[in-house]
Image (cartoon, rainbow, N blue to C red; front, top):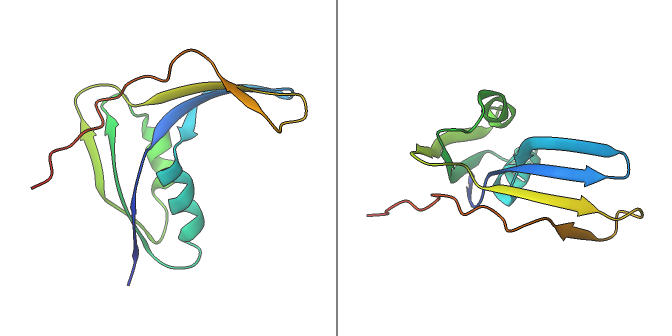
Length: 107
């Protein structure tokens, strides 16, 4: 038995009091998959663009994470940018999150 995870995978740019990172792996499906794999196998279903970095895919390519449902489509991967407050309890989205091509036709 495995858990089917259907959700978003994106690239995040994050600013915190400690510094800034650009285009790091993000998205609820990514985080859930990497955590849940410690308890049971995960089948990931998500879509990314052709610009999705190989190193980001490598982070997802873990034991007990089935990436057969990770679709790579023409277009760009969803991106989000945010700034966290000094106490890290609140954050603000910078600009408008990118609209990805993350729609796939299901039979």
